[in-house]
Image 1 (cartoon, rainbow, N blue to C red):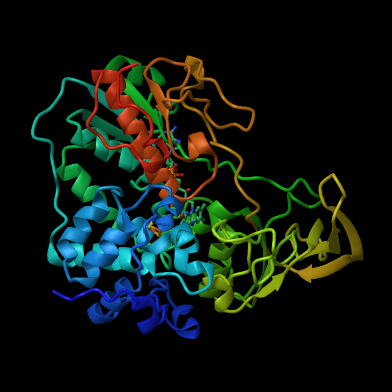
Image 2 (cartoon, rainbow, N blue to C red):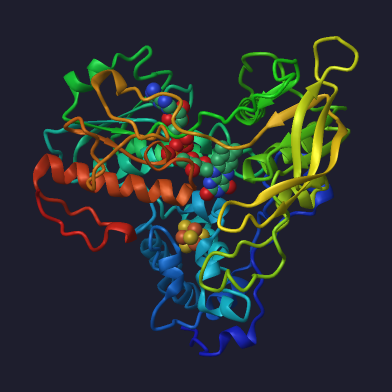
Length: 493
Ligand SMILES: Cc1cc2nc3c(=O)[nH]c(=O)nc-3n(C[C@H](O)[C@H](O)[C@H](O)COP(=O)(O)OP(=O)(O)OC[C@H]3O[C@@H](n4cnc5c(N)ncnc54)[C@H](O)[C@@H]3O)c2cc1C
Ligand code: SF4
């Protein structure tokens, strides 16, 4: 067994699993990540972990992954045990190992004045190895209860809730309005970030564990909400938060202006060789403007590159963040610093402090040709919010295709609203401390409950809600709490 060197971080420099060359990868929809990694290299990276007395990385991970343990196990080549430790807190480590922004790494003690451990790469390597070796197998429950639970929505929150509830022995049916299971992991997140066979093999695993999936099944649409009350003892609403924020500006109704999700889903479907409903949105040969500087915007930029756009401009209203942490953003707070996205590495014009005024149809054919926007400057507003000043007005940017990626508000619909489920002011489902809505036996999880978030939070939320549902049904639970709820007593209320 390899002995762990206490100063491993001095012996090995941080080197995460890399990405493919930007020029090469933007020619295809295969994952941007390097597909191969070297075992000895990962073992060295695991040795960089200092095994601190207080593992701040674990508090940085929303699901409390037991990071120092698996760093050590990988260093010692005990990959199978590392996988078990990883699955103890995370149902789908590849969802996060490939796509988590890794807040844990920012919380790693080494990040205070050195480069953090490559936690996310190690997580990915463990689960890659688990699939390669055939260690990840269906784990159906030994015994079944008499309870039936419905899960509405099959994103990471719905799937983790379903797997946990099924492992507690309940009969679980997942309803999904789309034709495939997976939520944003399937339709939304582009293939170049997460290939869909990774979602499918988890679906196959869950099915083999005994979970029933009903696709093309929209609760509140072709599936009457009453069915959930009639056929199930409890329900989990995990319908996501996909209602897009719109920009009510002159020219908004012109052709060629689309929401990010419509754009991205179409490409997901093309890659899966499925029919593409609605008008074809294609960037080939076009001047593309993506409004919104966040991660969804980045996915649109990267997709436009792959479709062969002439030019892609990504526009952000706010200023470009600083490269280094400012004094008011110290470790271990999450850094509010600039990081080039994978999409920007592939080349696109980045514009900050730009405020769009209008979409313009120059030739009168009903399609957008350009946007007009102000260049602005943000200034401290004293006690109030920052104030903007226009530095250059009505700048014109060519745009044959505009993609709106300025954020999401709330669930598009709450299937349980007809039953009287209360909604918060922001449109998310209102729940109590047990994640139950005001309707007995109806729980909510994931983005539908939290608002737009991250995969790791959705997985954690699904795990938490499963524990609450199990407790509600049976008066006790063996399902583990996530980090967020680990101080709560596991007793019947
Ligand atoms: C483009 C994009 C890229 C992203 N990239 C990342 C990333 O790289 N890393 C990261 O951590 N996070 C990322 N996120 C965020 C992450 O995907 C979400 O936080 C996460 O998927 C939320 O999971 P969820 O299960 O709550 O909901 P969702 O994944 O949104 O799933 C909800 C599901 O419910 C279904 N549904 C809705 N209504 C009904 C109904 N009435 N009946 C039946 N089914 C219904 C929907 O069809 C959908 O499949 C990204 C988000 C987007 C939009
Ligand atoms: S899930 Fe995300 S935050 Fe947690 S250990 Fe993995 S990369 Fe880090």
